[in-house]
Length: 148
Image (cartoon, rainbow, N blue to C red; front, side):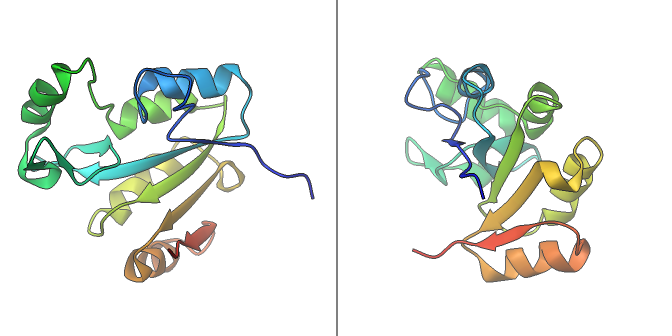
């Protein structure tokens, strides 16, 4: 079995910001097999690609997408929406998706499976209930439980 090259949070070492459209574009350019990224949900229900649960002392789930963009924009980062990442990556690179919280598994599955076949992505989480929920909603999805 050939090892897979996974661009963690996009080609984060080569981009100005991790988990950014720029980092994902670089991962595609360097021909990584997968792009790994993290999904969170904002207060107003936007599914975004963002690693940390806080930014500058603010909890991501307590901020609207616009509020978060105002904060991160000062550092030159606009967190991409999941829909933007999927559009960029479609037919170019496989996805290694980490769900940071539960409660939106069905939305992520619907969005991903409408554009990617089952061999083109995997979903994982540190949360056992999230992994179980994904597998319960769609047994065809390759899942992984992260342990640390």
